[in-house]
Length: 227
Image (cartoon, rainbow, N blue to C red; front, side, top):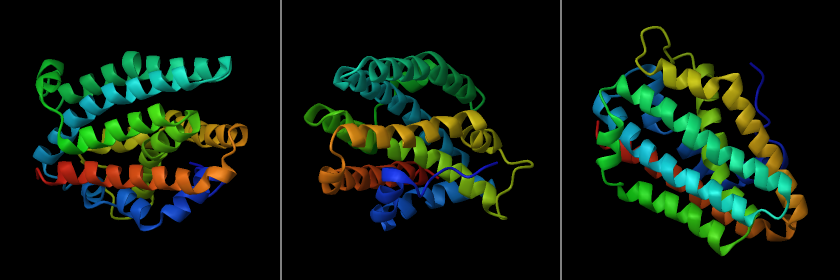
């Protein structure tokens, strides 16, 4: 398994300069316990419900990315992302949640936690107030961060796969398919930055990226509270 280009390009610079906010996100006790197989099931079930609700808003964010696109290639990529979330990722998520005793109707009826609302509305606000680059800077911590979390877990000798009830989650985000999604997002961020004056806007992009990283940490913490 080759390493992701986590230290390259604009993403690598943002990740480095986000510092402790990024480290707290990718090494939160929730994911460490998930890797060890010791995460209490109520915490994971609560996370799964909120992640279902999160995905709905994430699809809306990519629909907004389509609106904010200024060329056909970006519009097609955004449309493909919406379709992938709505038609592929959400049905897979629902199927996975069924194994944890959760139905789609149950999850859809649950209210969004404040952390879910804060994160998703922040992403949408950055897209509405800014351009495609601002939106991508808010989206990429989730897309690439999950791949890094899985990579860190697999590199940790304390991670347990055999008999781990969360093994499927780890394998999903360490799969070649998901790692390609993450690598594509890293390359796209560079392309957007080159087209939209990213260097001159670096301070603002870093603020967005860091805030999204903090909101990711809060999302883990939300689940961790229910252990």
